[in-house]
Image (cartoon, rainbow, N blue to C red; front, side, top):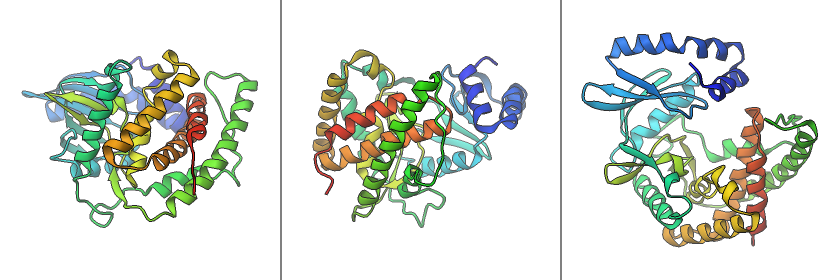
Length: 319
């Protein structure tokens, strides 16, 4: 099995356990296929943190997701069940460490619309958000889903000595990015406390609703691969604003990117009747959080740090 990024991530995150699990995947998949009568399983090209493959179960097109992170998959199962009958992919079957879902076809993601049809992509993302918000789950009815405050606690680096290990950064770049990350994390942590103290409605959010996680299924664009988090609506927009990475970085200058992001924020705020200020602030916090997650995963946070500085420059009011 040749998926070097996936293999690297498994070893970086889980050590020897991850290495053994990665090496045993072919036999695991063969055993599961024989047990459940899955056929023609073919892994997707861009594997990162989970094994994800498409195939068939009789006449049904399927997607199989296997992960060492059984807690995350259990959470995703609950979110998929809550989002059923909305613009979300259908869950067919699950067991510990495994999800089986319907495959979206033709399956093109909104990334294929960038940059020529950015307004179209925003419209489809808004439709997904509005549909998913018709889910009437509550924290009491859907246990095990984290609150945004739990995620944002990662931004508190005051008593931490986290060493930023970039990939593929040299030592000087790692030190520079580490200093930048710590400074931005301090600002984001203070801002996040202020945001979380506001009396805002808490919703079940997808949590990672970017271009690659909105795909064409028949004639509708639907959400896939939810993380699941309880938080305010403004946070749901943040992942889209930062993507698609790295394509957005390649084809736009910093000033063009700032203009693009500002236009996106205004459009989302208008379409979803949200606050421009709050969307911008949550996007800044989200970008720094993503950089922090990258540090923990031993990957390069530089793109997220670049985005964080842009979002910070767009913040007008934090009161």
